[in-house]
Image 1: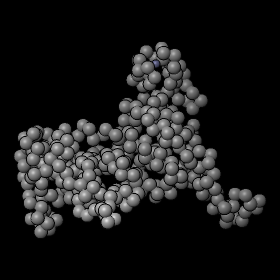
Image 2 (image 1 turned 45 degrees about the horizontal axis):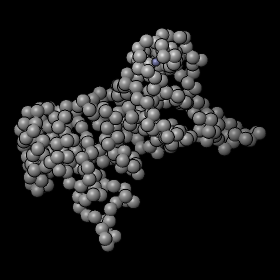
Image 3 (image 1 turned 90 degrees about the vertical axis):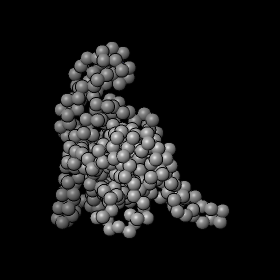
Image 4 (image 1 turned 135 degrees about the vertical axis):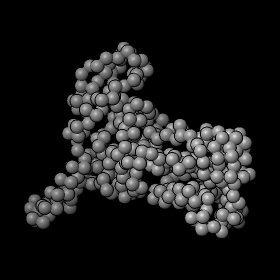
Length: 334
Ligand SMILES: [Zn+2]
């Protein structure tokens, strides 16, 4: 982190023996603002927050046979397990071995929720971009299964939309021209909502199939619900297996309607916002698309208050620890 402080905390006049009054004033306020935004872990008062979570099991051997053994130098509770290992409430969570206070993480989440792009966020918090990306990885990991338990019911609007591969990844035909239409170069995203909750899943490349739309939504729509859609054929298996009441419109007819008259307007509007959100993060690896969809769904689903969302995330982090193990090669470079 020393490196980060040097780069972003620096002013042009740091090495001047006698800065002018104006330079001194700018320097003082710039640095004060930086320090206010980046408190040291010890001063951030987060030990109380961390200590309020008691680990359910030892992160090393999963035993619940452990005892409290005082605090570390930051005032964070330490435990000792019968397996001989010591740990803290943060061990095995995304806050493990962090070099940033949790209050910065809160600010980061709030910015992301406000649809701020990685670049803008990095600038706002004066963090290096690689740090923002590292935090985004942590956020993705936390939200990995966040759509798993969502089940839509009642009236459900379902429609697919498409997002392009990055230019350099797009497939070309023998003559070097980009494939046209709903080709391999388009990633199909299924979006469904019952106006209370919304879910978004990658369905694969090009046109969706019966099998893929069924696989994507079979665990997320309550049997017997009413399905409003425009792809009778594609959703046939889903409708049959879940005994849905199908209300299907022909897309040719829908195209001629004004938005306000379009029965799929509800889901079309979500498509539109989703694309704005994805475009704000343009240039991301399409391998991460499902992670972005999980994040988007988390942002648009209840609770609507952003601070309540952060509260939910902090609970998820401590109550369902996820180690960064398989991403250990992702080294924080700042
Ligand atoms: Zn243990």
